[in-house]
Each structure stands twice: as C-alpha cells, then as structure tokens.
Amino acid sequence: MNLVLLGPPGAGKGTIAGIVREKLGIPHISTGDLFRAAIKNETPLGLKVKEILASGELVPDSVTVDMVKERIAQSDCKNGMILDGFPRTVYQADELAKMVKIDHVINFSLSEESVVKRLSGRRMCVSTGKIYHIIYNPPKVEGKDDDTGEPLIQRDDDKEDAIRNRLKVYQESTEPLITYYKEKGLLRTIDASAAPDAVAESFLTALNL
Ligand code: ADP
Image (cartoon, rainbow, N blue to C red):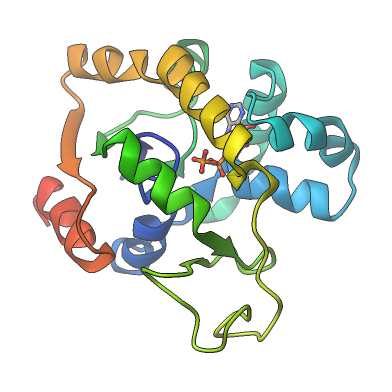
C-alpha cells in the first residue's frame, strides 16, 4: 500500500507515521528526515540544502524528486511506503504518479494557531527521528531521547520566523494538492487536533483498518 500524508507543517504527520508504520509493515519515508540526515552527515546534498531548510523554503523540485526516486528504489519499499513531506508541489505529485501508484492520500487538518503552538515546542532526536513536544509529549528525561539518551534539538526551521515562512510556503505550494488528490478520488481528511493515539486511530479508520 502506497500512502501519502498531506497537511501543514506541525500537523503530526511524522508522529503518526511513527506510530502506524509497524502495524502497516511499510517504511516511513520523510523527505525532511532525509534532508536532515544529509545535512548532519555533510554530504554534497546536505551542503546544498542546509540554508534552504533553515529558511523554511522548499528544496528545488529536481533535487527532491531525484532523492525520492533513489530512496523508493530500495528493497524495503517493495510492499509500499508512507510518504511524509512528499509531494509538496503539483510538479512533484505528477512525478510521483510516474513512479508508483498511490492508493490513499490522508490529509491532516489543523488550524494555523495549533500549528504554531506545536512547532514552537517541538524537539527531536536527529539520529532516530523521534519527535517530542516540551508540553504535549515530553521525553522521560528533559532534553534527552528516551531510547538513546542523545540530546534533543530544536530544528532551525522551528523558530518563529521560519515557522511563518513555512506556513506561507505550505499555503502557496502544497495546499493545491488537496484539490489535486480530491479530484483523483484519493483524498481522506482526518482531524489532526487530538492526541497522537487518537489521531493514529482516525488514520487507520480512514484506511478501513
Ligand atoms: P515540516 O515539519 O514542515 O512538515 P519536513 O521535515 O517535512 O517539515 O521538511 C523540512 C524542510 O525540508 C522543508 O521546509 C523543506 O525545506 C524541505 N523539504 C522537505 N520535503 C520537501 C519536498 N518534498 N520538496 C521540497 N522541499 C522539501
């Protein structure tokens, strides 16, 4: 099963994908995580995209599409995947349609006010990708990953100016995908304002699981 997660930054796509991926038995592919790993490892791709991510702008389509093509050619994707953060533009959606058949698109619906609250309190472990929130989902030990004990970071793009820019970019470039997938009959919208376990349940219900 090939799934696409749509919705504004901070809607909880990565958190929910982390909860449901074992049940579904397919990998979670987050383009944001792939870019952050490249930045951390200082690869040529990482050096190219570092400033773009920090500002909240989008990485050029061609760079993103090439990275996704390479990732989904790996053997763990043969039974499907959960795509999170891709596609983010109509161009990317058209390119994706040439690579795999999308079964469902789940649209995470959340108000702008909640987005800002969630993102400004978000912390994450760069190596495991696990996401926390200082109030809603704190780690067991402050500032440390529950599994590895590594220090948690605040993403550069979770600072206020970048958050506002990401919302603008989302509205201009990504929101049109809601209509794009609705017209293809693939879209299901869920309320992303509840706690993670409840959103995960609505997610599975939307897939009839
Ligand atoms: P968010 O919390 O905004 O959903 P992500 O972790 O998905 O964040 O992405 C972080 C950043 O990585 C984006 O702001 C953008 O710069 C870049 N990025 C991720 N996916 C894409 C994409 N499909 N196209 C272009 N840029 C992307």
